[in-house]
Length: 493
Image 1 (cartoon, helix red, strand yellow):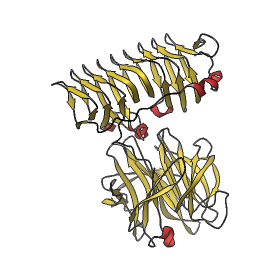
Image 2 (cartoon, one colour):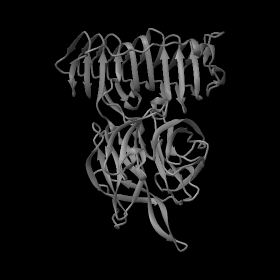
Image 3 (cartoon, helix red, strand yellow):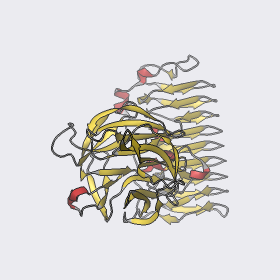
Image 4 (cartoon, rainbow, N blue to C red):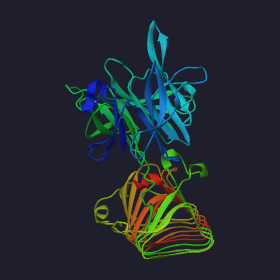
């Protein structure tokens, strides 16, 4: 993830008032210097549609401006405009996030309350083209240090609402009204806070101050994972930088998102594009380019349409009616290919928490530790968060499998989602990770699948009018008929 620092009082060994662009490893919290800006910045936000990275910078006189950063050298590429509404009110937006193609921000506007001037919080919609703000509604709280991102249609705001103690709390904000609801107290104090969300919807927070809640180094920023349910934190580590005031994930548009270890085919009216699920459910307005690669042969026939790039290993054949909007090039080296090991999941899993289906059926067939999963005939089931082991996996005949949290399924065999079946993650494919050892994965007819599927030994077929949202990695991949495959770029990082 990317971060911004405020080099207050010469922090980070930098000129006073400057700002650093840094990268942060979400697993270790280790921060790395990327570039220096003459002016500090905060409220990073990544636009999945345009691939632009936005930030806010102060202008002086209580005014702030929206800027677009150059993703290559991390400098300010363009000043978009002053953050001001139609009434001439200037907005200090210190937390921003995109959702559904719109940029939302949390602003503070100084207003007289009880004889004192205090920063009253407002939710605003920011026009990325010029910085103009449209107020949505008051938060009902006074946010001081703050950071935020939108997850599943809610703006999560991390803020200190008391200027002296700086106790950091998490709020959820209604995007239609601006009303803020307290989720919980993190139990931490911080002079600078920032919030981001990863590909699976997990929140990450950078909070300055000692992890133990005190100590002499109140400037140093530490990274935490943060529960959107109760504001509970898990300490990850020291970023090595002071006053981190903005965080954002950037989708990896240059990463190869569709991989065939050997060969790949597209035919008939197959359609392939991409989007970023952190911007909302897939829609044509959020669609963007994808990169697909086959380490062996690629054959593209019929009226196949690929929005993006195609990279081939041994050979390629492209029919005269095929459309590829990007480049068609040979790979310099084979794309690294994953493996799947089910042994740990077979020995220890959450299968016992999976009860009967909505029609009262046992979804497991067989006995012992085999656990063949079969959901059939307009039946449905919701799988709780956890790790599961299936001997094989079948969802068929209008059946619906729903996932509401992070689920990993290890399949020691084949996967079939066929005959109008649905695998639903609520528009967030990163919640469901399927890893299979079998030689066949089928998604066909009018079936719809939201997931990441890794099947290194399989011939994977997406056919008929099947719809896939997520990531597919297989030994061989065949997309044909009227099938559509929409790659979730948030899973490519």
